[in-house]
Length: 461
Image: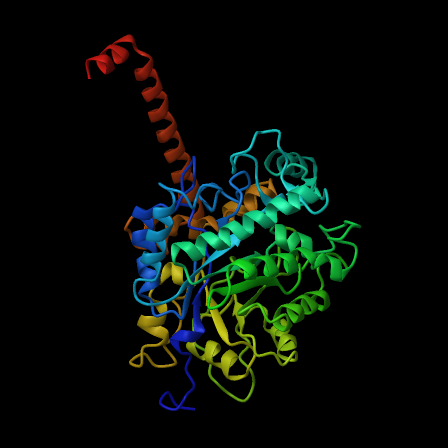
């Protein structure tokens, strides 16, 4: 099939999917408008069909990483609300709708990442700690970073629902086109959906139907206050990809998708997979492999470029009209076109590739002057991954590769271009140096403020 008559994706089918920007600052973690002006302007003008924001946490006490934006209890009041309205304007400046991804990390909220007392544990459907790596050192490190979560009470669940509804209303009032509920990757909603982390025996657990209760409640209560045309999306795991017989299975994951596409309240569903304890998720294990270097040819067989194609084919059997977004692994125009043409999905999620090339759809994928053979994201592999292998503490080592993308979004937020050559050691040691510098500056500042002449000078002013 030649370039002239080949099927190509269209702008409406390409989604800029959530990547954590790590740019917000305490004490309120409001949208950092000066940095988002640089970052989101690029995605807004990239010819996407929809832009989905990075994770917005719904509870300021529980962040997944320092730098997350938070939809807190005062976000609808000034001086906070004007920042949200500015963010909505920036991200939709070229006419592309933008929706806000709303999340709660649950047991994945590390110590120090939220505005909560040091002795306050994270919440989880059941008190199930993360297990990552073997040996005394790994267990000690995990306990220091994540600790043992406490089982969420019914009051906690009510508070979580109220916070999610507040986030959805905030997005609506600020001018965003909608929101997406993050129910994947081992975050709180995903924890309620998985039998590994949800061992409750009340109305919120004990059976596949009851594990869906929180998600059902969220969809209903958000729709009650945010009717259409407000867009409501849900991101779900296809499976937890843990050891055989452990965690969310693809069969139960399919039933969860089935409810979403049949409930009549959700506008599109995104499929992903895996979590911190995963063993076989292609998405989470993909950092050590160089991305596609040559566009695949369209032949009689399916290209199967995306990581979760097998599950998406099962979803196809539901015969639903609700669009399915498939994310993870897409790099080429032909791979994306094949997935859409075959009916496996209706929407293509692009994340890591559009951190390195924020205008990838406009400049390459949708550009008629770029041939199918050349229409793919720049091949890339995160450099310096040897450091992740020599660090004995897995909870630290396993999280280093994603730092490459956080680093580059911070660069973009400061008006710089992404640096594809930045290595993990460079990013780690730069971060240590910056921490030392900022800590030294704050120490000197506190010392200066403590001098007697400082107080006298302030009286003169």
